[in-house]
Image (tube, rainbow, N blue to C red; front, side, top):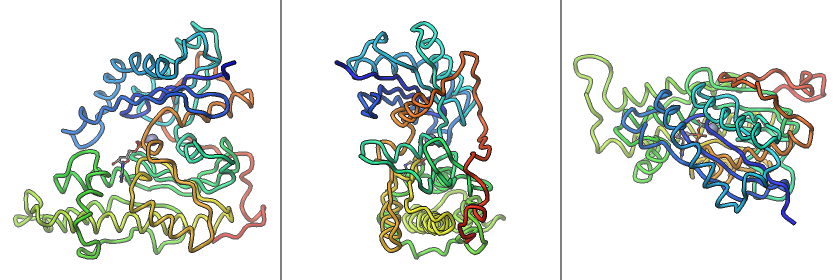
Length: 357
Ligand code: KG4
Ligand code: ZN
């Protein structure tokens, strides 16, 4: 007999995605309709274009996820959908589709937090629990560290004060005239560059705490590429400088990310680090994390590359909500901002006997 399965829908940013997931976490299908080509000429996601594109793609994407999983709508036990955080118009398209299906099929609706799902993705396709852990979401919209007791019990312990790491990759790529999205194109250009060629700052590293700031690094790339503002500043980056600039920028971002992750592990005392989000697809970042964790005896789970960038399979976390009886009403709304109220376990670390690094 077929195991119970749910349909998951993700439309928080610029990927329209749907997946069918069995109750044991098996991913029966995962379909992603990317909008990258629509946003490429702008060097970043344009919210209005994103929501309009979701409208056109959502039904074909859901249909292909069901077809690939060989599941018909009447086989579904629930519909899960990302409802926070993200772009308001984009989130609304997914939520409206999910509500319509839940109502017409008379099955439960489950709302999913996109950040929780990025961390949950670290356990997909692997046996064993990845919690408790330090969760690290490094994407186009977030660079956040979490103290995670369970999939749904997370406390934010650090975050970016300005640009997210992925956003910095995208903006630096634009300065260097590399294609969008910037992460993959910077990492490709960096292959033939020298990461020590251009001195780049390591923002917030000398300050205590777990916060990040990447906007200064983007400005450092601009000045190193074109010179200081003024009449002598170049209009475009000389192409022969691009590999060294890309490699030096990438090195600086990864250095900061890895060292702050190490600090978070020391501070929380958790034995495991779970890293997800688009930037976690970066090869050098994965290598550096692996090295740091092996040097410090930390267990590391990085989401599989196909589950780093936005997808609906990571909404497998919906099964945790269903098992706990957490379903949503049909008047559920989207929450575009990153809202994280302290979770029940989050007494101060001192109260829990941990050290404040
Ligand atoms: O998680 P994601 O798909 O969307 C958000 O939730 O934001 O992340 C997209 C971000 C983009 O900024 C993209 O440049 C970055 O992830 N990214 C990478 C790589 N692949 C995607 N950054 C660095 N290296 C990569 N290989
Ligand atoms: Zn994401």
